Length: 146
Image 1 (cartoon, one colour):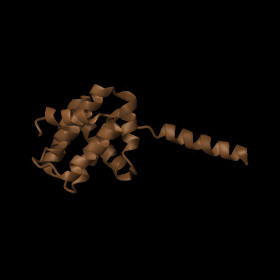
Image 2 (cartoon, rainbow, N blue to C red):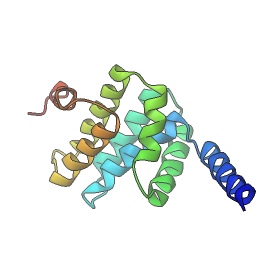
Image 3 (cartoon, one colour):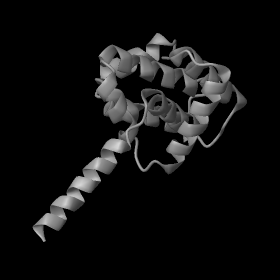
Image 4 (cartoon, rainbow, N blue to C red):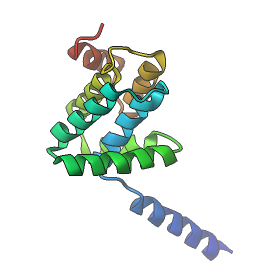
């Protein structure tokens, strides 16, 4: 019985290790979560998402489209945000995580509207990225938002 339990735990750990996403997919999935938070997929937000991903990761138009498509699917299937933020926490230092939050703010404000649910989603992501409240505010103000 104990050996069966050990095998089950080992299998779960191996599955979890193979479920890791690329840093590009993790960042893009979080951006997709913010973009869809208010229930509207505006053309401005889609365009800004393409611009952000292409610039941030130096991707071609086709690579950008592929990573967005993959990340939208990951976001659809996600049960939480931790699976994405944990990848970012493993690969990025504090300054880089603040930059990710700046990108989230840029995308949320791409349609010149900032819905409360978008702000809440960014705050939740910021917490999962282990950023202090002052760093969350700093990221927001860095892109010109009050």
